[in-house]
Length: 385
Length: 191
Image (cartoon, rainbow over all chains, first blue to last red; front, side, top):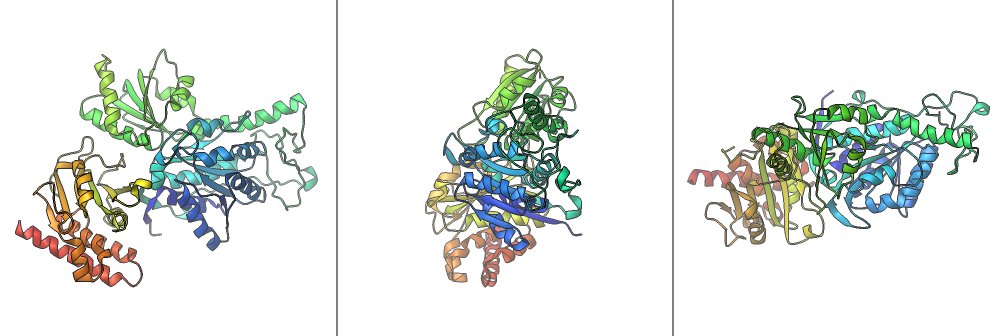
């Protein structure tokens, strides 16, 4: 099969990925800088037997995709910070009802309506802890338009595999820039479908406690009777206040995600092979400036490396610590006032690795020069690089 | 491609800005350029644009970063090539051009070029007189850029312009491209 290479915007690549992964329902409410995703879905879905609905707002949008997913259709919505905030209550509902859904958040500056057309990574924490209660999120963070396509497919697959909402966290720059994308052939991509019940309807438990933490999921109308509610429930879905059942259900939500942190969150590294003592940690669009900064630093004979997680929720902390074994100073670069850095402080032994902030929140992306200046500063303060 | 001052960490990087007034089709020109280079010439190209209220009216711009290598930082840092179709755009973006960068202006619109070392072509006027519509000034500019710099192949540019041209305007756009090639060739020969 001849390879197809296209020049696509990040938002357009997201549409391609979603359709390839089998998304056939999109309920959304347009908002900058995510609007092109809704536009693309509105154009494409009706031509392939899917459905697009522009809802009255973001609360309705997330509700519609939860409903569609319960009916057995892979479903997605896309929004930005203000809409993501509105969706939080129902995102919680998707967590507790274990309904596979994909929520794309194209980050812009906040709080509130904030900076509609400017880049930001200030929803880093919200992606993991936006709604109340105990739950464990998955948030994928691509770094190129090509990755937006692949991570959208991955987001859909993970949501199906773990019966959970998955957040795809983009930003204004990645959403709007155009880059060459190698469109994969259908036989090159793995498509995951949710586990369906194999038992007769009388035996079916919608929230069955299993070894993997993931229960089979029957669709509405399949002939399986079950209850779903936002209340903590038993295996059949009926509300419970029984302490042992409460713990079992909350542990189920936790274990199915944290057990797989190492496979959900991978790391891309640059210049880490010769054990540099100084490294830059960043995600998404910032990681690209970091890679460039590594090359600039090495041209100046400064041994520096870069490390980038592909998911920030959950973080593969064992693997992260292993990679930072020889790093004495870690620059955490991000487009906010310090969110990723707090996560790092939680997981990294600061007696061994000093954590140094590099933050920008003026609506522009961090440049390679800015990171290089930080490296020079560290050198200037007497550190061996 | 002529030898230029190297960008730190990215010796092969070539940065282009196409600028003018809103409505002159410069974003589309940027997309066409990046698409031709990325999908047909086989190099890497990243296109970005100013977005938001500041992009409505006034100076409009599209940026394209080109490299044989993987492009890490997607935005422009110091321009190798600036196309300015209006005085406002020229004044606003000239400081972003490298000292040895190439400036191409619309000589009919930019009455006060910031430097004598630039290429001037009356793009808008040529679009009206040669093709009959001012709208194709962007395509004439692309033809001239192609001929002067070689950052994109004629073949790739022609293919993409043909593909992207609104139905019924293919012929006019092809002709506009030829005008661009021709005026740039003459300018090169004169130097």
